[in-house]
Length: 407
Ligand SMILES: [Zn+2]
Image (cartoon, rainbow, N blue to C red; front, side):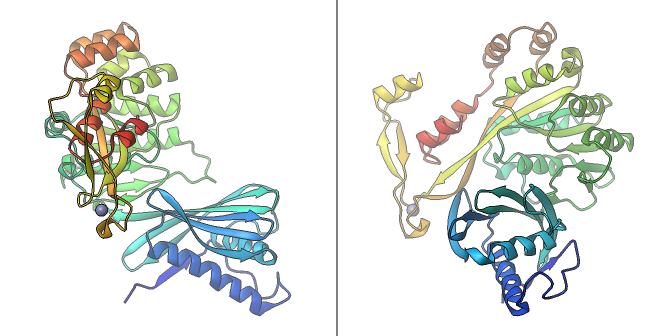
């Protein structure tokens, strides 16, 4: 039997009938909304959208990367739907002309969830997006992420160094947290102190102390990182670095001989260095504390049962600027019962690993151009995201188009 799903509203619900003339109707709406959310959780959706139009709400939910329509709400009930979510999320039900955000928890069996509700006034009423975050124990190991063997060996070596800044970068939704938690599992020993601070705590590791910023608190994220570092953890995990003060306290923490793992948005590994320097970080401080940078992407994984090979023709190779071995092939999606006729199943990650050599650090400190640093990194064997992607496309794990689009 499926686990019962329960919600913990931030506020006590209103007395029945206080907002609606018809108490029965209100009860129905509450049940309907709760069922929509429970169904979304049941199907492991990551978002539920209530999209307002002249006829009412169109309800869609995100499963994997795509949004699917799952129902409609008639126009006259729109306000009641919004009210139910405002109550759950601890928001002000008397206001519907301003953007509001809220948050509530839910539980499904052993699984703990956090739901973030965002409301936005539009021409046809309030648009609502619920983001569902599934807290789970981190069990993914580095060896299960699909990192190429040679890159995995290099990254494991970097982690074994046991101090400095390890940056995991990439666009939103590229699986950075999974890599970070797998990295923590790799280095964390039971007699050590591991602490984390992240706007969304997605994974739990037994023994690890984790926190997240509270929108209503007076603390800035940078102050929270700073106070975390004062506890002198052996391993510190910092969620998104977005500005100079956050970057500064994170790097200062890494300077003090501890493992600091942090997440940041960047297009590639060398760009991440540029971003930090642009934020105002002194290049010498960066060179002295940086141990490794990963950049990654997630692309759809081709169904191995039905993918179809096609030759990597001369013209494709020319376009890629590559010479491939004879009879090289790429693959395209087809569709079969195994993959519900989609041609895809799951995702595959592409990785790029930058490890600063003495020469690369010298160039960063001397503020040489990012192109020059990149050229030197390639010379030293940096395996680019593009190369990793093409290799995975040649192995039939993803289409060449998906790989190139993700870069
Ligand atoms: Zn298939």
